Image (cartoon, rainbow, N blue to C red; front, side):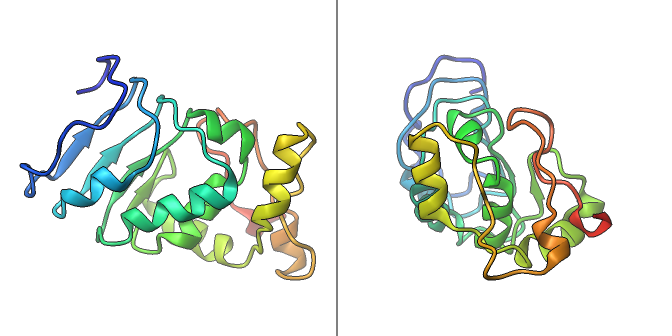
Length: 168
């Protein structure tokens, strides 16, 4: 269903055994609740759509994906990615069962997950900064290690926003 100018999720209630859902390069926006109906999902590609979440809202929407074990998820190149440069860190923190995220290599997922868990994100501050179009300060300096706070983020629409922070 990629590249079809879809503006909403297809009806998934009748597809409970669906394992792969490729909805990239569409115009889909809104909540992720429809995805919950496909309990067997192993791969979900929502990249290049029109999802526009704030950090707090993204955190809540990710709850809809908690039921999926071993999920490969692509979210890159949605409008929220530009407003939340640390969206990959948030995904890794909220969805510990992810097998893949965007373009992070499978072999790097565990290292990235551990690094993400050492970063403390201030979601409300991120939303406030985004609404004022200011540079984002993504880590709350009251938590996390010095190395974690030295996280380097590339522009949001590059292959991977989150780089291995252990080298910094």
